[in-house]
Image (tube, rainbow, N blue to C red):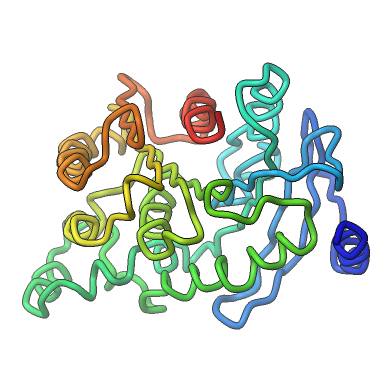
Length: 298
């Protein structure tokens, strides 16, 4: 089996190339314009830690907004998550188990359409939909996307195409206990949606600065009816109190109540943190990224 995986890995090198992405440790392999039957092609960056070996197996963290993870010189706002620095530090201090990171680039103009939980919108009445659509003050209104709702196909891409590719070409632990999904803002919404829709695939979801106000908060009703089994899943939420994050606390407190009502226990399989004064930025998420990673990968 290991020989087969080794051959499969090197048979795909023709579509891989290491990029000049500045990382402080490990390396990034880019799968350029990864094709899909479900979504538009996009880059996928795989970060491997120093000492990566086919003789070991690694947990996998799937991260949205993949172009924002490693190198601030190439991001739209000059900020980055610092994933390589954060994870390398945790690995060196033996605070987390071995892992790799799969960074999925967003599709810019279709980001909200791909990240907004589709069934949450479909669950509400036509009257409620019309009320939201006609309210100009609603944040991330589904009507603002000319592409329709694409979240279900985005998750199909990850689960049916990308994950099998990663598991075939890298030395991974493919079970749900070692498969995690992570995002911020709208990426937080699609992460909680992913673990609800595919509880057999993802064992943990990290949702940072989750953009609950999207479409007037209709995702909360979806969550109340679709949470995964608390005995076999872990979920992390957080938020700051500055800039856009200042809107999130009332929603997050309601989500926490829903979680507890459905059997999740705080500081066991549920973690929900408030960071006073922290804004809605990559720099803020970078500062606290070690907390959810250690919680999930301890």
